[in-house]
Image (tube, rainbow, N blue to C red; front, side, top):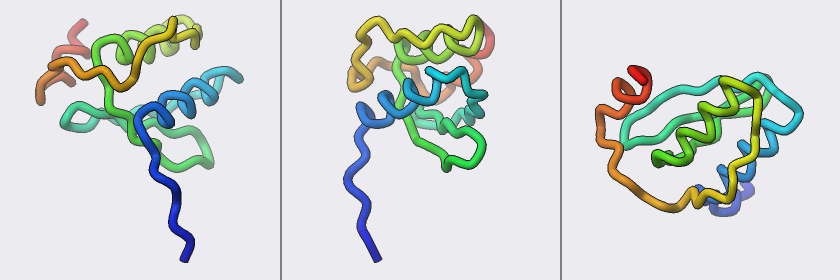
Amino acid sequence: MRLLPAFTNSDAHIFIKELMQPNKYLDITMKDNPYIEVCVKDIVNSPYVINSMSWEWIMNYLKIGKYDDFGINPNNRDILGTNYQFRVLKN
């Protein structure tokens, strides 16, 4: 069995941005802690820990198809809380 290399949140951010560039349909599942899982057809889920800026980036892509992240740092942590799903969907 081959061990996969460590997959950091920065790696996940780059991977998701690469998925966005050909305007692929993203399937996003909101989880606790707060993190999301992003997948596209034929590619397994990629866990991604979100902060308020990365969530805005994802929503910007979903709303208007723009994938530029404006240099956000996916490793910054802010407090979205365990009930972040309700708050972000309410907005």
